[in-house]
Image (cartoon, rainbow, N blue to C red; front, side, top):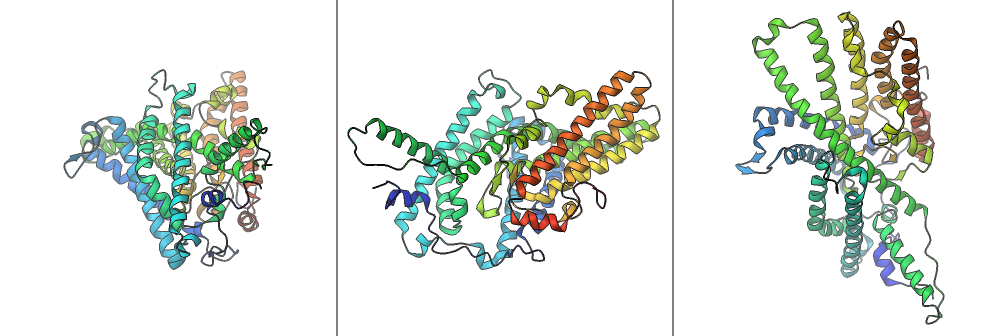
Length: 489
């Protein structure tokens, strides 16, 4: 008899008894009905507010230098831990807000008791939770080893660029060792979801173990005449693996991006305070205004952007509804996305053929600089708002729920459109200026800028192809006709 039939152990690990269907009456997902994601922006907006408050607190209490203390208890001992504490506080606020929002929205339907709990099969439920925790812990440990041995992260060489990520990785692993088991029990008991169960990362480790067991039986077939089913690699295995790869790639980047941007935000708040309440404004020039507009806006916008993105990449939970439903299945979709991020963007040399955004500050006519910089800032604010509207659901290359409100109510790709418009606002004038001095350089810069735009266009196309398998996205696409420019394109 196949080990897949009448196997009590396999049933315990799966915990996908579907005799009790999920109650989705609170979220019908019709064209005119309210969706869970319609108010996902609440956690994003509050997360952004928490970031600004945290930055002000860090500046006023000089926490960057002294370290973080709460109620007289010293929490952080160095600069890296102090920065990580900020992003953890912000993420904690976002998770709490989203948890409360969904609880209030769904009421009694927020909890989905497991059939094992209702049937009082407590032993099976506890055993299922233990096995899932153990398998996920193995997966987590393998990922930690991958980071330690991957040359690009420089752990063996002692490189400091990814030091913040390795620090937070240690904290997350320790936290999961202590909290993972009770969390798994609670989730299996009260957030029963057979679909999510089938895509759980533990299934990947279980598949590897099944393959090893099958191979061992093949070797010992002379002693085992029983026929055994071949383990099957399923679509759910693929989705689970791809969702993990997304986290593995982007979580370190968002961590180091935040640790780079947040200190600028803290310093800029102090600079603005001194500018307003001191005599520094007396000698304030138009050129200095342009420089401040550019630098302060960039620091503010991208600090918020990466903080919200960090929460989305690192934290996935059924309790806040941001678990991954599917991930980009094509190589093209992955390539055009990851080539926009380190280290892969360095391999696309022509990507840097475009001029730097900062070159707009070199114009002799300060009013032109003001106009182009203002257009850039407004575009980046729209870009940031797109991230904010995802709340805790933000992630590249994945479907974690379709967003149809905010900027997404006007075009399907507001982030890509606004980011490219910002680039053209500050880069193309520089190209025109350079054309009078060196036509060859201007031509190369034009090609680089067009290449950047084409990459983002392809990201939009592959994203739509991926999301079109979701009926919710098909409904959304029928409501919002335009991709990039309302009423035009």
